[in-house]
Length: 417
Image 1 (cartoon, rainbow, N blue to C red):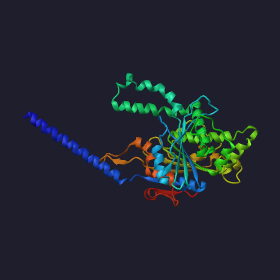
Image 2 (image 1 turned 90 degrees about the vertical axis):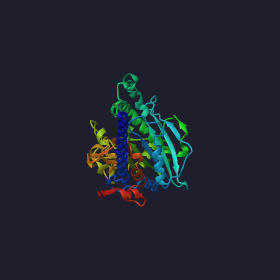
Image 3 (image 1 turned 180 degrees about the vertical axis):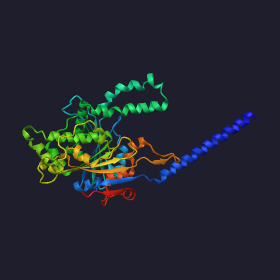
Image 4 (image 1 turned 135 degrees about the vertical axis):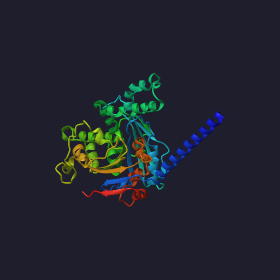
């Protein structure tokens, strides 16, 4: 009789638990289905990659730079596919082109991989060449020093979930620390500059299928980049790498021997100064990784460098860098960019213009009156799979191409000065 009673109680309790779990799941799914996630844009209108197609009339080149953690080539595949669908690019090259990056500053150093794919519309009137930079190999060797911490000698003492978190932490936490070390930072920035050199210097047909050669500016690069448009997408630490990389190029351009460049470089620079380059920074970390760093050489001089007729107008790097910073408020490692930051902490020669996009990529759920919660990991890693983020990068805001999902689900406050 006791056994029968015990069995009945177990069935009742398990039934209640299952019912409670079912109710919880249903409520959470209902909250996600309603999808009331915020999307707020503060800044001037921008045209997205569609505007780049209009400017080039054919070819747009996009460089992607990853953030913390070990990445392997092809990490951007999902983002590529969503972006090509949003842009109506239904055809692609049958193969990738892979460049093992080499730089004369560090001839013996592995600088990572540049993986390149060509995306086209059916009429082949529009071409997007996607350059995926993988720089993980630079920091992986140093992170090997922590492998002992997750080996069998230590892992069995941890709870299973904590061991998983420890593996994740040991793979991601060291990257910013390694990057902020002077020597490692120089190497990673050399990787970025080399990738940028390959992007601006050659068209798809001129790129080798596989290569370990050094990139150099040639007459071909001068002729090629005049007609091309460029854009850069980055994630987390990649945002700092992109900005530091561009500022390092600005410094190099300002230090020509005897104040002059050879004719090829001079022609290249003159054409590059006419470019307007959008930077799409996902999970932007510029304010965080700026801590303790010295400001750039040239700051708070926007009008001198960026306004035609300005005292230093001929010394600008580009006509404009449009910085579009995506940040989920529940991403613990992401920050908006205050307008003063551009004045005081970004090189004036970049002629930066800031747009902040405050966007919930992680669903916010109500924990039955105990408060609201959003998964911080999803909030940090979910940008490149979010339809609104992809639509904004592809088609911008306040243009004839702006996607319906942006018009319907994003609020925009336009800046007029």
